[in-house]
Image 1 (cartoon, one colour):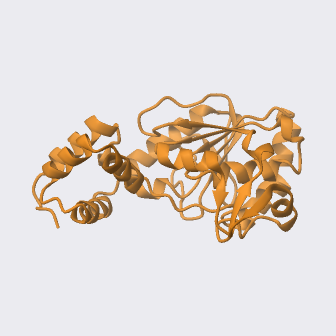
Image 2 (cartoon, one colour):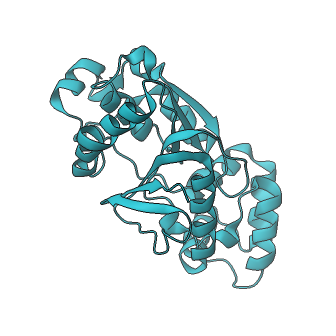
Length: 262
């Protein structure tokens, strides 16, 4: 286990190297994760570990990958996706037409944006669908572009869509190019980079639980600015927006929030 001292300097060093602001994460939880990784790399101090990741590209990418928590699966919390299918998509299409701009923020290994394409394919032709998918971690974006998933990861995909859009390869499942082509992946830091504008739907689920309350509020405000009036924010079942009215949302139902016109 690394020595206790030096974590404040370490946070600054990490920001210089990666532009990831560790102050925005819950400290105890994040420090414990980082200490484990430093121990695994047999470093005796934060400075020694910083020197390692500065000079070793593989260790650097391992660190970024470790920091960005990638727990992902298709159609996570299926009852929420059912609401999206039966209620949210039809209302958005009725109000805004067929060219809906959707942003999957902190998209991890692509499970979520690909789920969005498949779910929306029940309402629109594939060629009309375009999802922007962003994540801070280029390794998970690379994995998302490959589009190869475990049986467990795709367990919640509706049977007809699974049959239509996946091919089994040696116990894993390859998603079809027709779905992949509808998603544009980009690197993006929610705490630092500028946000897309004119979004009709933003999906960001089970990511902000790792952020401080201040950082969460800032992100929810930026999401609000990125949405058109009556646009929808879809959050994770582990999350809540305590002061949603104050920052410009009405609660639609469950984990869906609508940007109000005030």
